[in-house]
Picture (tube, rainbow, N blue to C red):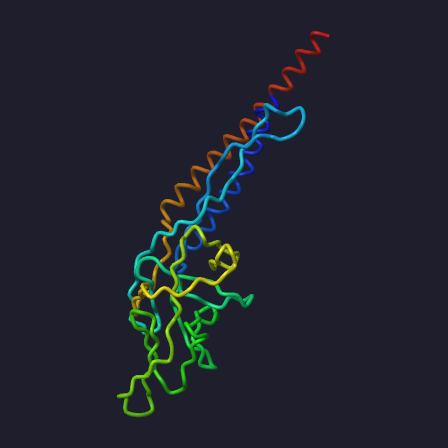
Length: 247
């Protein structure tokens, strides 16, 4: 009886946690460059005296789906999408280097190249600054060029190159702010082979229909676990009645 309670209780708890992950994925369907989170159930033994036969269910976040999302043409010069594998380096709010696939860039009031969320984009020599009265464009290799808008636009100047990296996916960890960081805490060197497409953004790789199906499936799993708990309670009451009659 108690084995049933262990399994059903743990199964219901972690089904709810999986629903939270699926809900987070679903909420980020339209988030540029978002990578879906993956979860799975696993069986875990109960450690302790008197419980060698007990087991319960645990939820494991097995990683991230790094599949590239579809490209969305925007025609905006400061919108970039990474081609294939690779990441854009940014300065995270904690001051450390982090990586994103969200290539919607902008220029702030101080001329710094940033993401739309206000994070400074890192160049291979530090932050990239765009002088006033200039129009910026990004090349396939991440090179940022400017053309003056207050004179005859015939002088193209390179002001920096966006730091593009391509670390092994297994070496990255997702942070609570949605950015990815190296598991060892060390910045990843720039990779000259990473290319970007200008005038486009990468859509998130979440399938809304698949997430909805998962939510329905998990809701049914939760109902099953609750029914098992109810069954265990009913059986316990019946056995108690039988024992009372025997006495």
